[in-house]
Length: 160
Image (cartoon, rainbow, N blue to C red; front, side):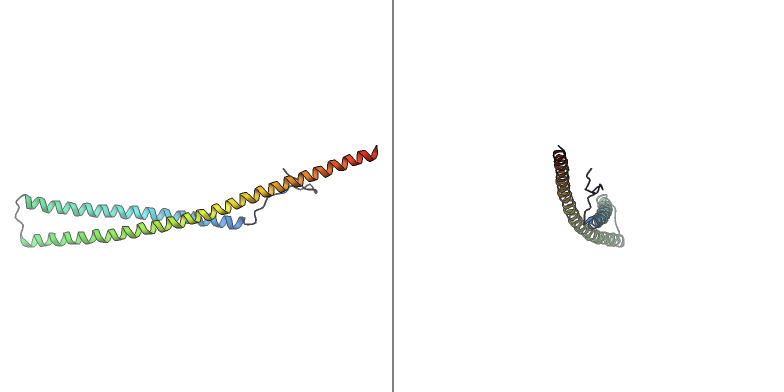
């Protein structure tokens, strides 16, 4: 608890507090963006896995029917071939979508790291200025008490 000569409490005020608050808001917004990008990437990976699983299932069905000695007519074989080609195209498309989502997630992660660094720098600056302010307040209090005690000592001395 520090008092100045007029008896009022001194309070530390950080001159860049509003900027610090704004950076905190930006960081929280970026955390949300990063979280959304992570969720999107997970979803795209899940979709890719489903498509590949379905594609493998259809290949296995075709293989089993051929290995089982079933006779396939030419039109049925063409339909299956076309369907498998479509699935292959779907897999490639989904891989591209997943790669885009992964790049976006990485971009959002890098931005988040920068926002966190910016905020950390501001918090460190605030802490350092607070320490400096506390040191100055203690120095002023010590000087005030020294002046007060020497004044009382001098007053007693002059009364004697």
